[in-house]
Image 1 (tube, one colour):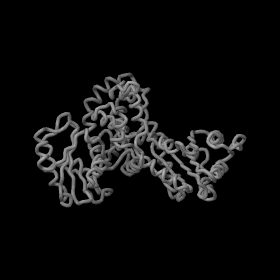
Image 2: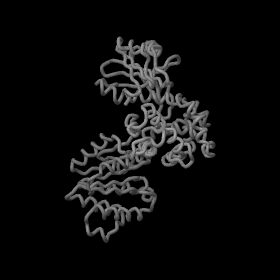
Image 3: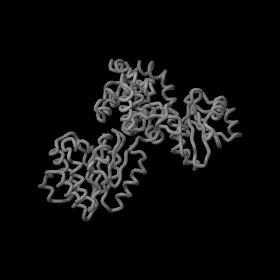
Image 4: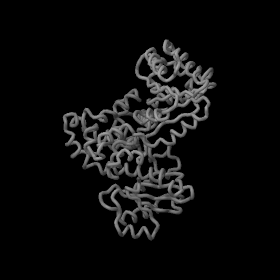
Length: 471
């Protein structure tokens, strides 16, 4: 399935329709959907899509020549093999004199492994030939650090040449839910809590969760989880290690840091002690993980200087990575000895509600920021959560009209009642004064609301958001 990405496709289409030379850089983590986005964009267009692998340059050029023979009707190509990148690129630029041509070089980091000078060669080609052609050149890579350092950074030879760039991010919880039309609303949220918004992971569960010929469930969420994560042969059993080895030089150190955070160490000194590193080095490693989008540093939304705040807590940003370090890694020995049922029943089920509690808060903030604000035509200028030693507010916004929304999120099996609303109203009086003006209240519940609460909120103008409303 190809879900959403409407804005990304529209942006690429606008650039294509301009008719001028384009140099676009697309990057993002493994499995996030870059290749599928490019294939969708190239449909019914004159294009050459080249996926690099870990081969020598001569092999890459030979493969590129073969692909070009199928895409370009030129008798010269039948007896020609590109000898170097410069001649290949010049040839493609010349082919755009009459018709536009898209050239995609996917997994660009592999092309540079055997020729570190390739960015410089492309820079010279672009300055002398490419920018005056109708070529639409796209460099794509799944090694985020490499693409930012060697393609986008000021020190790169390619700096200033690109006409556009995009770091492709995971799908939202709502878009992720489209993969699981046969699941209940709560199951869709749990699937997102396990997999995050990575299309390849979602697609894997979808492929095995329904019988498309009959439209009936073939495997439950539990079965998908056991087969894909809780067996050594599962597609997602070791994916975290592949991800870390792709991006990082010291994957074991980063793995230990993620394990510590997943285990409840959220402050810098706690993480340092758990891993056995000094705070300075720990901070450097954590900065790398933040840049990769695997963790975030969270501070109360009311903080005036978040980066300097001593209240900062480190949280794992990626749901799949969070779930893997929380449930798969600690039980790896049991999993490898064939005890998937035991791990699921005794390690996951009793702790799943607690695990989903924090993720449900993130989902509710996504809802307010992406969907609810659009519906009400009131966009939040700031959104986050607030906490002190004696209180916690799950959702707190400062809106463009001067109002503030206060939200409480409950991943409960029972309906939410008036006591939750009373507690939220009381906590709202304890925030800094500038956050108290024009207060409105929102309650989120995974299991609905009691009748007395529904009656009361109708009179007081308080918002109730049930799980189905999130979709």
